[in-house]
Length: 172
Image (cartoon, one colour):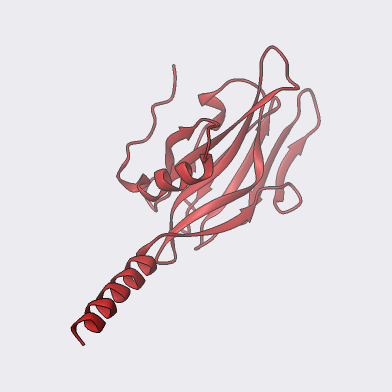
């Protein structure tokens, strides 16, 4: 009977730990899924679109001079600029889906694929994962994960601890 009680306690603990873990929801950042706010085909072009999010948050996809970035819009309509394009000045694009990390149904982090062209050969790209903490007062980039083995898993671990991380400083 004592062994059965111990097994029950361990199983209950594992279930509680699993329930406390963050979960993921994916939304699209493709221009088909986003509502165009403004765009222009002149010169290198410009695009600004409002994309779906979760928990009352939305994303704003921006493109200019063949570079893309995201802004986070809170439920109270406060905008936080993530400035992906300032971390790498090469031509770039955001992946067509982003991963929202949620704690008890509330967004706490965002993981976005950031594809950057090689300045020497624009046909070659490097695919980073950008981890941003999400909050009602502040959203910002906290880490950029290089393309390595288990890149997605590393990004999720980073995202799950994002709330306690400082914002990355923008390069000069």
